[in-house]
Length: 417
Image: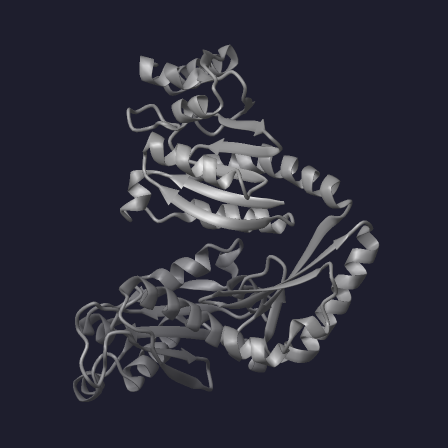
């Protein structure tokens, strides 16, 4: 099944909002064995939407749209779909009832704009949306499936999971007589290109119904292997075979499987070895501590931390020497090590991670350009520090700093426990 993703909204076109819906939709459709062939974003224009529907319907088996279903004048998707299908909007009493009940529950008035969200094309299959006010819609014309979803991410995901993905999965199984099965292998410490070189030509071990995808992120590269098969047991056996091949080629870089993350695997190691961790952060502003506390049961291993943005607090809270700050600067190996050692002693933990850097966009120099970050990790007997050069984007520098800090902790826990 070929799927085209069509996201709608002026705010997306001008970059005011990051288009996370398209990425999530593509991943979700790929996970059920569909082939995503297009990502297209257009503004709130009837003409543009009609043009794209006419074009995409010639090459896609399913067109998934998001956005333009709200109550304001620039939400034109319903009107356009009614034109495209030569249809009319009619009042759906069930949707209106849900809108009234939702308004009563929240103690809000229900104005005409809100009630107009119950006006839906007569030909559509209504996809209920308990998380919001605008229902989704599903149409079929000339063997092409059309899905229209609200642009609010939580509502879009809910309707996809409740209605659309099961429907598409069933269609794919009918089309192939086979079901897609997937497994994910997680790697770290090796770039995507180097990992591809290490694995070699996939055609040497992939069969016609097998697939292999490289999915890079700040935390490493995920290898997603897939199999189309009529039998679940046989499919799992084939996935085992493919996993064994990949482990033989790249096993030293593998840290987890499936829904694992580097953070979850690392915190599991902390719990397994009954170790505690603290943080002393500067340029990341508490992001590392926040990451640790996102995990359930974090109170068993995460004791707390210091946010030492100023040199004064580095001295007062983490026992960094004024001499080191003067001689080497706040962004240095020496200061990072002292932050980690001082934080570990002050907070009485087995491990402490420190991060100090120049996140940008200002503050860099020839010797220490924007994106220079020192990360140190201390335990009772050792302290290690590494320098990273992430580049010029402030948000990316902070995210990568957190990812590398977790990676360093994972490596030490694997070696020392």
